[in-house]
Length: 121
Image 1 (cartoon, rainbow, N blue to C red):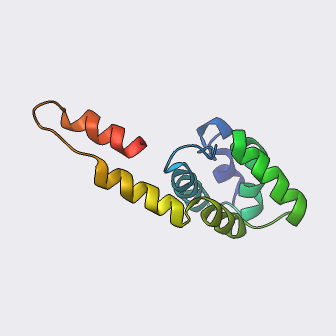
Image 2 (cartoon, rainbow, N blue to C red):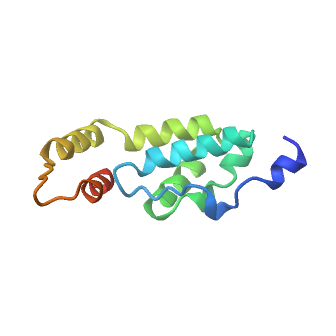
């Protein structure tokens, strides 16, 4: 990665953050981080060095505990840990149940707000 490309790397506030809250928080974090890593051809160490700021709330405590136990690890390793922690059977069941129980009523619901709200449920 050249110095010109390094100058273009988004500032920390523009990176996805991971709080551990919300149904899709972990997936948005992984996808967003993967895109930045790929778009700017970032080495894994540059990505993982930002985690102390990018992980927030309960995810930050989880990150600190794992980092103390396992030391510096690659982005690939961290993705696996996030998926194992968040995208488990109970998460899949919860998302599937919420999807099945949601109903769209054309007479009382406007489609776009309903869809956006269901995405964040």
